[in-house]
Length: 285
Image (cartoon, rainbow, N blue to C red; front, side, top):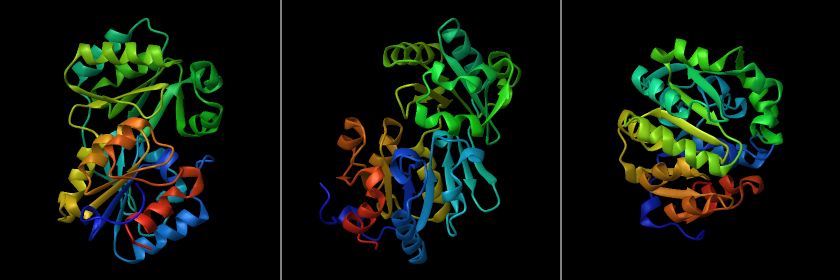
């Protein structure tokens, strides 16, 4: 449903926003309509929190540079930041043992790995040279190439840096392999949180991570109650956050499981669904 505001969404003081396919349009940009809506909300004193699976250094400039955006949940809740100065406020690193367990469990599978360390993203040079061969969608090719630091051997790199990994991704070519690799990683250790934002990714972080954990951290930091929060998302990695928020809103383009978890469904991300949700559901503009 999209009409009317219930008691769950009254007195909203903090909004967590997924980025890709939620706040951003298909070009990965913040539309002018969504920008103006966010500027109005920020001016009213509501806290805006980026809630992304991206690393801090790869967050969209349209959002990071928007005046008044103070905080960011990154890497699916593995690291939380104060945006203006880039300071990491809270971090859950994967244990060395968990990194090794996941790598051993998925060894030999046709996957490509990505590593995230201190807000930066790393990938194998082979992936960057031909992203589409590894299952990266044509729309995401430029984003991947422009935000990843290339390394010759990503597997070796991960083992060498296993003691300081914020999180890691496994890029897979299809949904069947995604399910297989997910199961292998989950069966190898109970020290990880596993999720996915798109079908070609298996995203692995410390077991204490998750976008919900990130939103809990910031509500406590800001001295707010969960009833005073709202969250927008489109994918399965947004579900826990959407369920936790006082008002959980799924995009019109969201996965069916995300829609079922939400209190409301707004418009499509490429049709300014964020602004519509701020206006029609939260009554903030």
